[in-house]
Length: 223
Image 1 (cartoon, rainbow, N blue to C red):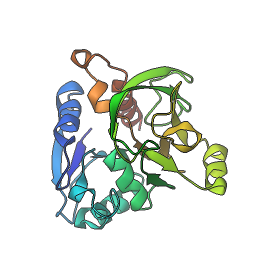
Image 2 (cartoon, rainbow, N blue to C red; image 1 turned 60 degrees about the vertical axis):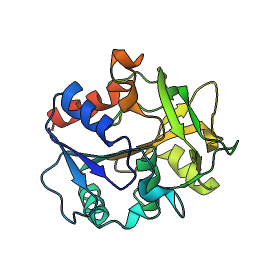
Image 3 (cartoon, rainbow, N blue to C red; image 1 turned 90 degrees about the horizontal axis):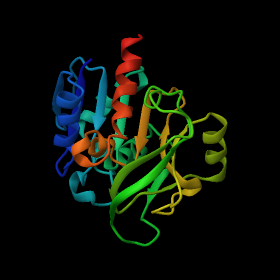
Image 4 (cartoon, rainbow, N blue to C red; image 1 turned 135 degrees about the vertical axis):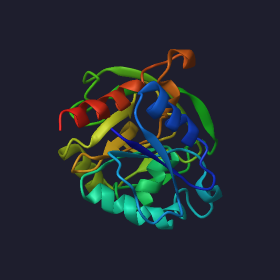
């Protein structure tokens, strides 16, 4: 399986994602510069966290128009696996690959700490290695993680079982319905604010995020 890690000006978690995909998971992995207009042969694309284009305008609003994003959108629409983490989630929202929008944290402060997540849907390509209801400990680091969607959209997410992760015990940013991660209706695009790449090795005091990458590999191996 081959991973591609998209790199924008201001990305700061690209090397973390590359390390987990290549070293921890042992898979071929390449960086993809945002000015590329074409993708090579990849099985899963990772849009990492950071501050793409300095987070000017809205988080992800400028990155959404980078040349590479048309190829990412085409890749996703053709069924390719895409995971957007933190700023990557924000970019997926701006690109229309996932529904909803991201607002400033309820306390208007940057938050960096471990949080607890509850696995709400373990039947996805990104969560199959977890148990439904399992509690995970994964770090967050964001200023705009307050996920919002209107009432009709939230009803749709619930109806289609698109909510993959919810904050458990504490909602650190005010996200509606405690939402921490969602998938698209086709189930091949995941956006999440917590950082699984920062919790995939015991040296980081948590391996709870590793299951996401293990789930992707498992699904690809079953194709």
